[in-house]
Length: 199
Image (tube, rainbow, N blue to C red):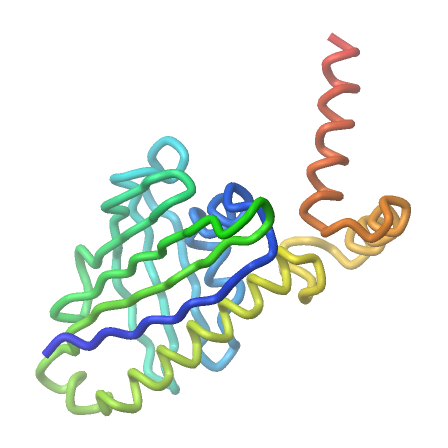
C-alpha cells in the first residue's frame, strides 16, 4: 500500500536560488523540527549533487529511529530533483521536489514523498496514519522554514555563527534590507573580485 504525502509552497525568490538550496539534501534536514530529528549525511557526491549521488537519511520519528540510504535518480536544474531509497526499512521510499517559475522572483515548490511502510515488527510499531501525519507535518514545517530562510526573514541557519550572522545583518541593512541570500552573494562576489585582483 503506497502512501503519498505532498506539500506545495510559493517562495518569493529566483528559481535558481531555490533550486540550489533544495539540491543539497543536508540543507533540507536543517529545517526539520527537532521532534522529527532529521539528519542527512552525503555519502558519495557526484558532480553538483547530480544523479548517482548517495546520502543517508537518519530520522527520529516520534521516538523511533529509522535510517535509510538514498540515491539521486533525477536532477534537472531549476525543474526537478528526485531520489529513492536503495537500502533501508521501507518497502519503498522516494521523494520528488518540483520547481515551477511563477515570475522573476517567485517559485512554486512541490515536495512529494511516496512510501510503502515495512511489514514485520517495524510496520506494527509505526501506526501508518500517525507516520503519514508526522511526515506531512515535518515536510510542511521544513518548507515554511526554507521559505523564511530564502526570503530573508527566517531563523538563523545552523551552520553560521551568531557573530557572523550579526555582521551579515549589518550588511543587509546597508543594502536596504535585501534578502540574506542576496547579501551573501554580494559579499562572495566582492571577495572573489579581491582574490582575482590579487592574482
